[in-house]
Amino acid sequence: MSARIEDYAIIGDGETVALVSRKGSIDWLCWPRFDSPACFSALLGTERHGRWSIEPVEKASASRQYRADTLILETTFETPNGIAKIVDFMPPRGAASDVVRVVQGISGRVQLRSELLIRFDYGSVVPWISQAPDKISELHAVAGPDKLTLRTPITLQAEEDKTVGIFSVAAGEQIPFVLTYSPSHLPSPRPIEANTALTETEKYWRKWSGKCRFEGPWRDAVLRSLMTLKALVYQPTGGIVAAATTSLPERIGGTRNWDYRFCWLRDATFTLLALLDGGYVDEAERWRDWLVRALAGAPAQAQIMYGLAGERRLTEWQVEWLSGYEDSRPVRIGNAAAGQKQLDVYGEVADALHHARAAGLSPAAAAWAMQIELTNHVAAVWSEPDEGIWEVRGPRQHFTHSKVMAWVAMDRAIKSAEKHQLNAPLEDWRTIRARIHDDVCARGFSKKRGSFVQAYGSEELDASLLMIPLVGFLPADDPRVGRTVEAIGRELMVDGLLHRYHTAKTDDGLPPGEGAFLACSFWYVDSLVLLGRHTEARELFERLLSLRNDVGLLAEEYDMSARRQLGNFPQAFSHVALVSSAYNLSEYESSKPARQRSAAR
Image 1 (cartoon, one colour):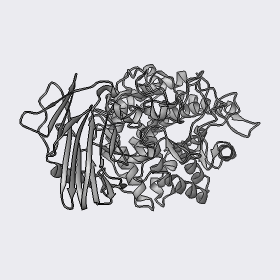
Image 2 (cartoon, rainbow, N blue to C red; image 1 turned 180 degrees about the vertical axis):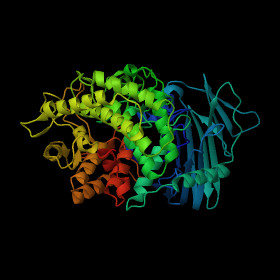
Image 3 (cartoon, one colour; image 1 turned 60 degrees about the vertical axis):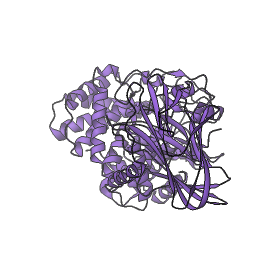
């Protein structure tokens, strides 16, 4: 059985990440890309679907941490006979991709066991294992296009369907393991020296972390979130995956299990501002450039998400041979929501491009010409129903948030043209902007409730309505905003955390039930800040920080009754929202994302 979601940490090389459990088992790794078929899939099945475990033979207690300001994971095992440490990391991607595991003796003598079970294609393909000639400790696992090479000084042997090595370390000793991916038709990459790679990897991450500009009281949490975001960047293109996993459930045993190893446009502005305010201009610029390339083409064919390089075909299918995380079925690969109509993404993209210009990022080729086409498209389709921000699989509706973001698309295009003297049909755009605003205020607001509602004609609430003041649709001091925030807190807050909406009352095409949505809870913090309720905002923010796991990571949701994380992990949206809220609560007035967005100039 796989570990609890919060019992995992990640290591990564800029093109993929591995999930390492508290017990020293790598239970999830897609190679060579985030969205490649996994070679270790125990996370979504059993150990028979692939994993790599290194742990003491004797009963042991475990603790772990990231080496300061790095993505180098250190897991310490304490046994009756001694203490050993496993140092896990992936060097930044170079000629090859490597997982390096160095077992270090700290005190006494500890006997450990390495069990390597490789199963390509999500646990379904058994590779051919062979030993390199004259190299007792170099093994090759080959199946179809994939090859893994394991190098270590210890003796390895086959045991049933595993490759096993039993060894011991005394104080001051160390045993390295290096597992390398390569295409099967090419020679195995040249071996790397583990200690040299460790030194270079530590130097890389500390140099990157040293750029962080946040100096507030939550610097460690902000930096770890920014590092997590960095780990989710696909370096060749600058695209940022929503999470490193697929099908971790939003409810244990439920069917709300989705593949998040793709790049969503919805995260655009918060991600851009988090990177810019954090001091990571290069990453922000590459993210902006990825957005522009992914969207290139006919506006009517724009998608809500794309592959790592901008791929459009993300066909969804189910992995029947995997039982799912804690029997949460189905396990899905690909995401059918890529074909949905979601009007809000146009507003997110327009907002991101506007803030990129305001921050002085170098102009993206043809970005304005593309934005003109997108804005004209929004002007033509804003009044149509869609699936909305939460990607419902029920009937399309006129979601209030979607209309608000359509207004943002018009508003930011107008402001960009005005501020930067760009050619545009401004009068036509201003007319549409006013029309959308009037429509939302008339049809998205319930006089009965005294607040905005989820969709036209509905009386239900939705946490996405918190975006109304955050994007500047209405000022925070508008009574309608205050009443909406109060209603959301009263009706969607459960045990102090916010749910997206009432799944039992909204026809989203799925069985009801999910955890509290962490990004929405951070949005509530931001809304409280705008309303001047700073003490409440800070208390909620501190509570949200307490939900992180022992190495500072967050999934998508949280189950307050079971006290555990839910959903795909680690979740970029949760960490971006954490960074934004930390800035909103900080003393640095110039770097408050809520004010940057709500007062967009």
